Amino acid sequence: MTETSLARLTRARAGRAAAPVAVAHLGLGSFFRAHHAAYTDQAPDADAWGVAAFAGRSAALAERLTEQDGLYTLLVQGPDGAHPTVVSSVSRAHAGGDVATWVDLLAQPTTGVVTLTVTEAAYHRTDDGALDLGAVGGDLHALRAGDLTAVSSVPGRLVAGLAARRRTDAGPLSVVP
Image (cartoon, rainbow, N blue to C red; front, top):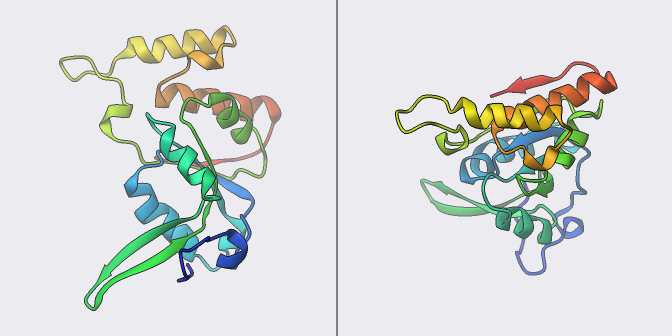
């Protein structure tokens, strides 16, 4: 992470090019940005571990991050006050509905890790709290028909990506839920 002026911040001024994507992540919310992405940014080999992050329900955050070249400011609160820090580990940001890009990314041998930070809203539930198998079943039906645009659930996206990886024989992959 690099502290810098936020005026006209670019990757060049932050001193870090976008790292090649090695991590595919579902859930572009605050928890991901404050923890997962920030820790990845601090890794000694961070230049090898770019994250392609996919938003949950809204494409707006992915659009804003794309406009900012994946850079954002994390305000870290310490005993001596708050310190703004630029985080640059998000190499690409996508709308959650961009299932085709998700699937293509998981089919790449250069993608080594899939991570998730999604809330309970991402797991379709019935009124009594049980898993809504209809939503997941609908996704599986859509995948069998080759319709990626109809896939909406987290399990459906994972199945689509893992199936593509298997078809392309892209090698092992770590999944960190």
